[in-house]
Length: 159
Image (cartoon, rainbow, N blue to C red; front, side):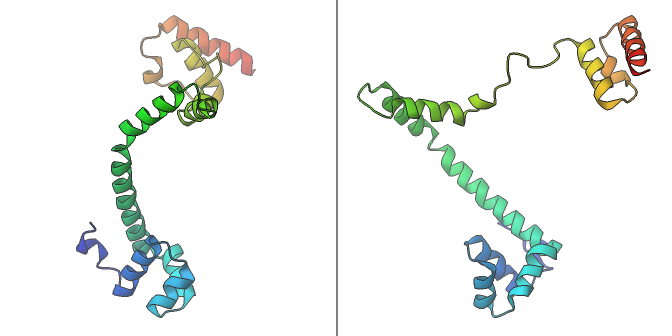
């Protein structure tokens, strides 16, 4: 949980507002419950760095807890999906398969051209994209003559 030292800049009402927001209450509802103006809650949420930090910390703790709980369900979820996909009578097999593929990012897999495949092509692309001086780290493992050729080619293509 939150360290009390970290919340020393927040009043009891602000800490209560954080809790209420995390429970899903609207700013208006929070303001009514702690008997302050809605505008005050809005200012805390949008402009008070201590309030915002505490809200974000507690949100992060909640999400981490939920993530850990969900991770315990992965095995049984996969088993259920396998059973649904292997059942020839299941009218939703194709839909399930498609959703699984989408959820693992199949629709975001790059085309057959994933990008440059040699260090020389990468340095060339970086030069063109960034138009910055080539750093020593960028050129590690590339023959000096190849770097000079790339730079010469880059200079002539820009002129």
